[in-house]
Length: 375
Image (cartoon, rainbow, N blue to C red; front, side, top):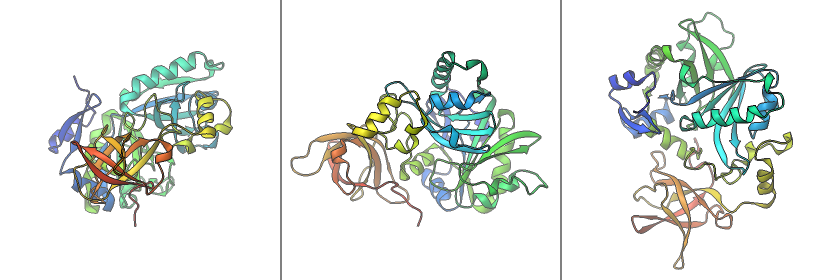
């Protein structure tokens, strides 16, 4: 049986089309993927991301433990700050990519991918069991207790504060900088609000107790609709993230693919000391990799590329050189775009390639990331 978020009844009432997404019954669209996509690019969109997981790590040794299991450097964080990071296995392969927030001096909130919650929690607990200072770390998987929303788009800062009743001008959500987090109150319950997102636009993400999620969703919609806010589903979330070349676990990342291969080496802090997967990642940074993630754009309109479509070198002597990991018809650019892995020597920007679609080759060009930039 498919799992459902606390907002399932809300999605039904709004007439959303629901699909199976990694074992969750989730809305793929409401008014239509293109309309929702353009709402996020021009105004605002509201996404249910309650399927994602929340893991809390507390204690005096929590920073050292997290620096041992994550690729980025926790020491760069101050209270109320977050960072993108990854968990890797001993081979350097990616167990998950996630956000970690330092919500208090010795308390961290990890937001992990829905399909990886149980895997992540089990792996973290195995690592904790052999961590020398494990008695100073408290690790809890609280995913079942929370829900989450993503409010994304250029107009979101104009109305985010009206979602939370407060006479105080301190700690306003609209005053947050990118990757900062603050705690606000809603119905007397704590809500974490961060200035983060997965769309390439300004925006906020909210983590709140599951039981208040329907009321919070309705409040955000009520406040935001005069600004052009629309509810948005997974379809628009995918087109938006692909245009800005953000990875999706299970597509660009998996346990056999490293952050360096995926072009995420900037989030691998080799200088912080030892961590799980460091030897492999250090060698890849020094000597290179056998595959590299690239972005591409079709030269003309065609059927959209899809995951696992073959990528070919261009020309009469073309041969298969890689595979597509994500592909869409871009609502913003009007042509097919995608991400895929090719050998590093074939990965230079402006290189000509072709993508095999139903037995025919569609010409494309490897392009700099992101494919979409706000003008």
